[in-house]
Image (cartoon, rainbow, N blue to C red; front, side):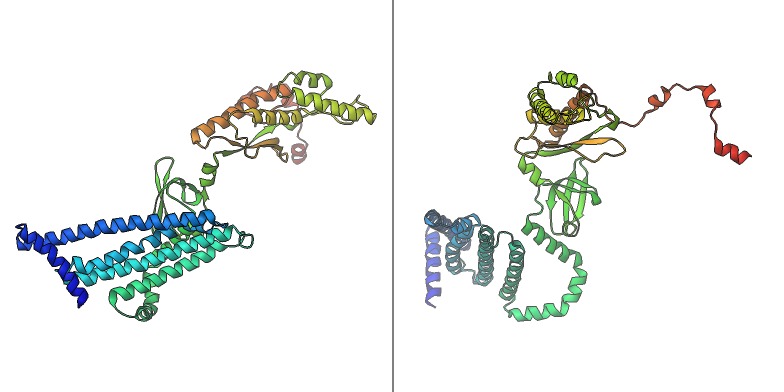
Length: 441
């Protein structure tokens, strides 16, 4: 009763001041409500500002003196911010009976809303603490390679379930066990009716918790024709705007059940992979004579390499008394080996290749289309148009450079190649087909 009297006294004082100013009684009631709400909002803002300053400042001082990064992770995951919100909430709880002293029917619903907010606030604190624990455990040797994320997901789902029960109990005024009993009886029907929604909800939690997809990510899901940027993620679907400006809609749970490619790692790295081969005609591969090595030494990128390599080979052949009248004896340079070395040197000096990532020129297993010389490297641009230009520039140069090494690029015969063959009709009439003659006899 004392509290009620105090509340009425405060509300009545502001109401009387408005009446003294000549405000009509009916209007004064609502103006009084507006004044009290405004005053409370200002007080709440000031308390929130001071609480954050005190909490965050204290956390920063503790983090500076602490030998562990636990406090730093707490600040990063907003644990301190959520705790600081308790102080203004207390002010709101105390102010509601004062503000709505003239509207007593509003007090109970508003108090329920503050109770729900308090429940959610503690859930946010608990979730932030779980994230802090996850980040901290990942820095330890014991849990560095353990699936900590999975355990945290289970605990997070459990927290939201508890929050749902408490909110239900707050709104209905009934025991949480009543809700659990009712849900148990209707669970089969609910799962059947809301199957897609439940699957989408679970998938959304997993996608969010694992940070699998974000809005703006470039994803590729060939099975569903998706290749573009994610523009929307909701409970049931993920919308992808393809590069041809079409929209592909993918059920959210397909991101969990099926495989897809997220290019975020490539975009963050600042480099995009180039993996393409030049197919060399195997019959054009051969050893190089001393004169040819001397000629290739005029290529600036190969001069130092050829001088050192040829000196090493000559020393080996001399020490082992190798007969070099045949190039197959001993050690010799090959045109394809020198070409590989040229590609490697060219890529290392190219201004558009990423020097901090893997760069390799390798020979793959020969096939019916020739021997592949594969380039495995990264362009220093992730922009699609620039990337295609860099890759084209590299291979334009290499395809033009092949002839300097007396190599040929393999290609299937074209119609012009067939027409260029000289056809001798007399010789064609003298061709014998023994199998046909046998069949005739």
